[in-house]
Length: 159
Image (tube, rainbow, N blue to C red; front, side, top):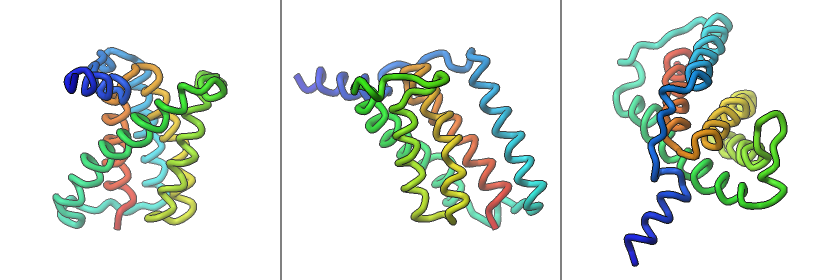
């Protein structure tokens, strides 16, 4: 009984299956787009800290733990539950309304630790994470893309 419940929770949150997202060209386009955007940010704010400036603990927090926790909560729980609602399952330009609603919540949470401009700037990356959640029916690709984007943010923007 407990094993069935665990499998149900893992399936619901997108942790049950490991899709071959690494074979998806759109996955690599999303990574490349992140590099291009971060390069533009670097040109706009030309400062690149060394890993020593922000430490291994911060690196692990921003690149590993935060993406895992945020994706579990936002894409694994919120987007999944919203996606069960008729209105939220509809798509506009290939993006589910559950993804859009989840991304708005994602922005609101980022207002806690980021200036308003940066908080709003997470909207498009959040849509990308949610897109891959819907596309692969898994959290693994959104976690990888989120980690990649956070690493770039840390290298380009952090003081």
